[in-house]
Structure formats: C-alpha cells, structure tokens
Length: 80
Image 1 (cartoon, rainbow, N blue to C red):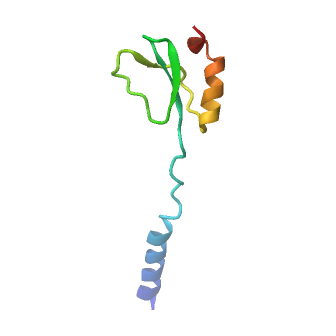
Image 2: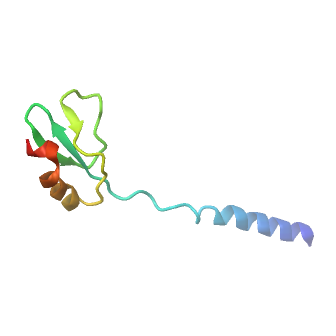
Image 3: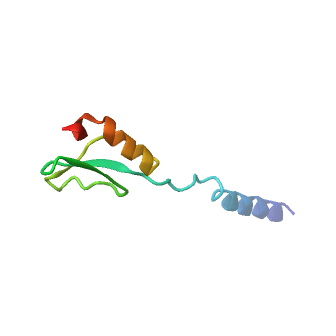
C-alpha cells in the first residue's frame, strides 16, 4: 500500500513539473541603425553584433512591430 501511494505521488510530481514551466517567449522586435545609410529599420530577429555597419539603435525589445515603428520616430539616433 505504501509503495503504491509513493509511486503515485512520484508520478504526479514528475507529471506536474511540465505544467509549471512558463510559456515560450513572445515575438520580439528590435530597432537597428545602418550607419552607412543612416536609416533605422525594424527587425524581428536578434541583431548580429559582428556586422560593422549595423548597430542597435535602442536596447529596448518591443513586443509588437507597431511599437518598434513608433519608437523609430522618437529615437535620436534615427532622426539624424
């Protein structure tokens, strides 16, 4: 009886641990600045830092593309 109860508790603990995991990350949008053309664009992938002409215009990660496009208008690096 004790072994059966212990086995049931063990199975429940293993099964419920998957339910406690947070949901996957949502979409992320970044504002990047091309230093050659002085244009800012919105990208949906993490910008690569090894490209010499592309820099991140803002450290903020935006949840929607609309938020990122609105931020382009307010960032000083994008107004030049």
